[in-house]
Each structure stands twice: as C-alpha cells, then as structure tokens.
Figure 1: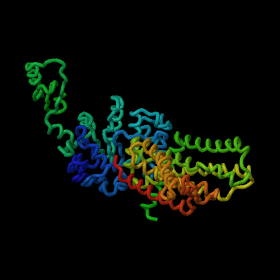
Figure 2: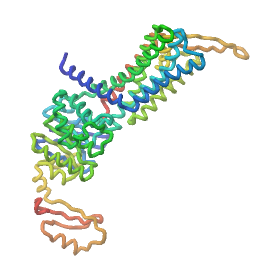
Figure 3: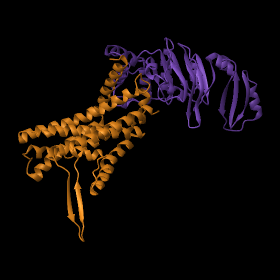
Figure 4: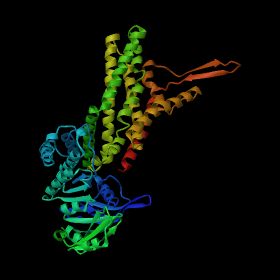
Length: 270
Length: 271
C-alpha cells in the first residue's frame, strides 16, 4: 500500500503523490516508460532512498518509518544488483539468510533448493566474480526467494539480459505465480507485464495513470500501437489499405514510422 | 537485553564475519601483508648491513621496528577503510544489502569492525613477530612495546575513522583511498612540519600524535634549541613530541568525530 508518496529531486518531482494498493497474492506489473518514476518508487519501498513525503506500507508496516520490520518478510531484486565477488552463491545466500535470522540448518536445506530453481546448482561454490550478468540475475532472483517471503519486489528483473536470459528469468517468475506470493514488478515492456502479471499499475511522470486487472487495462486502453520503421516513402493508399484491415483503428505516418493502432482483445489483435 | 538490540548485535556479528571473509580473500589483504613483511625484512636487513647486526639492547631493537608503523597503518586503513563504504555504492552491492531487514548503522558497524579486526590482526602479528625476534636476539622485550602497540591500535582507529569519513564522502573508492593517503601522508605532515618550524605544537594532527607509537619506546621529550643567526638574533628550533595522554586524546578525538560523521553520512546516503 503506497499512500501519497512523493520524491522530489530539486524542482523535479520523480514521484508525485502516488497512491497504489496492491492486492495480496497478486502479481502486479508496475508499468511505465523510462523515467516514469518506477525505480524511484521501488527504491523507496526497498529503503534505498527516502521519500520526500507520504507512506509506503509493506505487510502493514510503513517502510519510511521502520524499514527493518517492514522488510522482514520481503524479497527484493532492484535493478541488477552486484554481489561480493569474493563470495560464492552459497556463501552469499548464507550471509543474506543469516542477516534475516535463518538458522544454519534451514539454510543448508533451502539454498540447494533455490539454486536448483534458478539453475545455478553447478555454480554453487564458484566465486561470483566470474559470473555473467544473466547468472548474477538468476542468483539475485534466487536470493529474493531465500527466506520464503510473502512479498517480492522486482525492479526490471530482465533488464540488460540477452533474449535467452530474459526467457529464463520469465520462466522462473511464471513458476512463482503458482505460490501464495504478492509480487510487485516494474517493467517498461508491455509484453512482459501482460505476459506475467494479473494486474497492471501504469505510471508516468510520477503519477498513477491506471491500476486494474491486466485484461481490464488492455481493454480500457482499447488499442495497442505498433510502429514499423519505413525505409521508403509510404503512400496514402498503402496506409488506407492497412487501416481497412480487421481490428485496425487507423494507420498513419509518425516521424518516419508507420503507426498502426489496433483494438480488440489479444486474439483479435494477434 | 532488549530483543531489538540483541537482533542488531547478531546482525552486526554476521556482517563482521562475512566482511572479514571478503577482506581475507581480497587482493588488498595480500598487499597489506606483503607491506608488513617487507617492512620487517627491510628493517632487519638494514640493521645487519649498516649496523653489523641487530641491536642487543631491547629498547634500541624495538625502536627500529616500530619507527615507521604509522606509515604501515596509513596504508592499511587506506586499503581497508577508505573503500569499504564507497564500494557499496560504486560496485552496486548496496542494491543487495540495503533492502535487508537490517539497520544501516548495524551494517556500518559490522563493516567497520571487520576492517579494524583484519588491519589490527596484521598489526598485532607484526608486533608479536618483532617481540619474538627481540627475545631471540636480546633475551627480552622492552615492556613499553605493549604501550606502543596500544598507541598503534589507537592510531589505527583515528586514521581509520578519517578513511571511513572519506569513504562516506566520495562516490569512488579509489578517490577516497587517494585522498586518505594524500591527507595523512602528505598534507597533515607538511602542515605539522611548518607549524613545528615556527615553534607551534601541531596538537590537532593525528599523524603528529602517531609519533608516540615509536616514542612510547624511545621516550623522547620536546626539545627546544636556539641557534645564533648571522647578523644577530637567534633562530629557535623545537622538536615536539606529544605526551602519552595528549597522543591518546588526539587519536581518540579523531576516531570518535570522524567515525560518527562517517556513520551519519552513510545512514543518510541514497542510492
């Protein structure tokens, strides 16, 4: 639950009086273009920066006032975190788990499970300094699940990964949907959010635009836009032909791109 | 004990343990140990080459080995303390650690303790090695060596606090290391030297207080001499040595002020 949250950098309002209530056990996508205020919001939620005003509750505890207790039952992956290069995945997870108060016995059971889930078992005892970005992101996702939290906050978890890495991370995230977890994930990719999330909160210029189920948001916006870069001149006749196709609202030129607006549901638009 | 405080202490212990593990495996650990070994070998070799052997007097023996401990410690705190805070932001590990259910101050204390334990352990090992060699060579150890070790540990806290402050101030660990070394090794020494030349005791300087590490054994006191100037008048030259109490006070003041300031800046720092 975020209530009237604001973050100001000088005169720039990165987050502007934002209020969102995330449903328990939902997978909510926090969607918006780059610079919309997504990461700033998530950084406030994860105690990386302080809010200028407002409150952000995690499991009923205001993180802006009592971050330690608020984050007790929360797993996080913010951007692409780096790890201590001299430690192995097992040592890193033991370190993080012990900070959370996990016992050595439970860690010795849980860590192999997590490494198996994120497909990093064979790298368990190698120092993280040698890992690729995709491997580090899998470890990052793994550590967020270590304490079996009820809330997981993910900030663009597939950002910067190659297509294969993106698919692997999304597969792991899809598996999480089957568990009793509240996941709040930021992304600027509509496809990713609509594929993974059952709810979407859209934000731009630090303000919430819409927050509803994924289907409702898709239907409310009514149309999706496809832009195709045109290498040559496109005649008006061609645009009219495109516009006459089923489920195409209109077609036009936009800064050298053919801009096509679609309507209908997923099936019709496909 | 309050559950909250007990949990904070437990978390400090966890952070200290893993930070120490990081330090022990790091390249800077190898560098610092190499410097300590080099210093020991160099002083031994110079004594043998230029003095025809190691001194047979325990006081003279230890004087040589602790003469540039302050330099070794400046390098030590620059390696361990000056980058420890900045690196969390520069290397983005703060993104992993700050969202933990842990107070920033607990994280800070754990990191600082790890730096001091690792740095202090090497310092103590160096003193033990020197004392063992003293026993082998002279048959005893100057008891003031323990006082010298105490002062060296205090200097580590004073200079280490300054290094931590630089680490909290600068975004890059390398900048913090360079500024720490430049300040402690050059700027403070130059300012102290100028003040001493003009007859003023540089009682503000932690590096001036560090003179007591060697002086605890050699027992020098402040001396003033006057020299006649050509054409009349006198030139007064004073060589200052801080008393044990003064040296301790300067180092303790530096340690407290700089460490508290560093902790404050760290707790307010945003990613």
